[in-house]
Image 1 (cartoon, protein in one colour):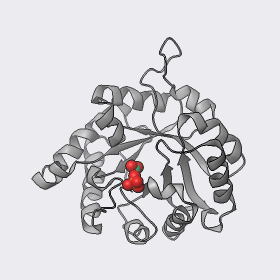
Image 2 (spheres, helix red, strand yellow):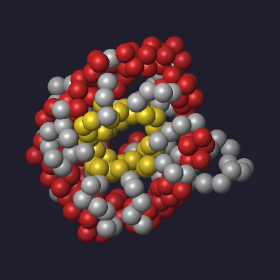
Image 3 (cartoon, helix red, strand yellow):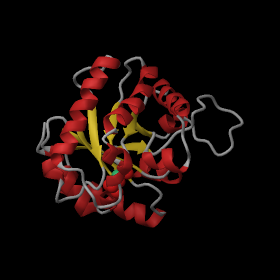
Length: 248
Ligand code: PGA
């Protein structure tokens, strides 16, 4: 596998028949061959995806995880250990939609991060400012406060995803200069505060599409892409993977 990491976040989309068609077309697509790529379907379809992806290079991720690590009476929850059991490698933690609709607190996110690492999986910790925070100029402070939760990991392997909330699902993409500035800032902050190594992977997410992937993924500070809408279409997702493969 070569190039930067691309993770497809399916969000709350998919049905058995549609997933089968999409995953089969991904497995057949030359654009995905050799790419460092993962998909994160809804919990209900992780087993189906794991079966279809067995023996392939396409990795599996989950979109969320319980803050409770141990088995027990937590109705509706899915633990990190269960995600490991069904074959996940990555777990999104703190996606802005979860922060916004489910009011996930820093304390909960810290527990989720620890549970993911304890299960031997890699968290993909999402950060990003709202439009109001961007316009007020406070976006660096917002991102720094979100990053501070990572101190619970004591340097364990983690991927960070910078996703400006105003660019998610809106078709508005941050400019290459805006992305580079925040990515450099995140890398510097992690290095300084959390002893993260220089090799820390920071993905960009927010309306990444076939037509902007080349420019975004060419940035040295960008370690890959977290793709929502465009990950549901094999041609668009393939072109993003193609752009990622060209990079080192
Ligand atoms: P989008 O979503 O690509 O549809 O903007 C990205 C994300 O929320 O991970």
